Length: 84
Image (cartoon, rainbow, N blue to C red):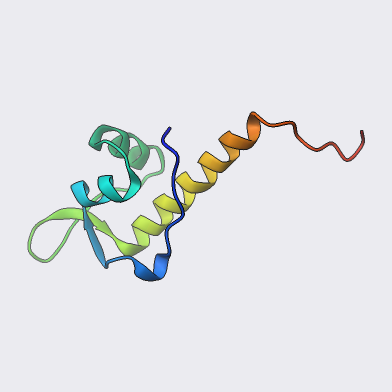
């Protein structure tokens, strides 16, 4: 899993094509497709017929991936045990 960087959601565009979202998340098209299916996020067609993702779906996907990548990093570290 690639390291997912922080994104300021206020600076997001209203619509992201699949290639543009791949660049934003630093993922291949295949990785993006797998993650979208895993989390039930499907591309939509905009008013001119392009497939992509609206801002809401980009935020939802990024937030999930961001926290998942952070939890993966923490798994390798010693966990704090309040009972130790």
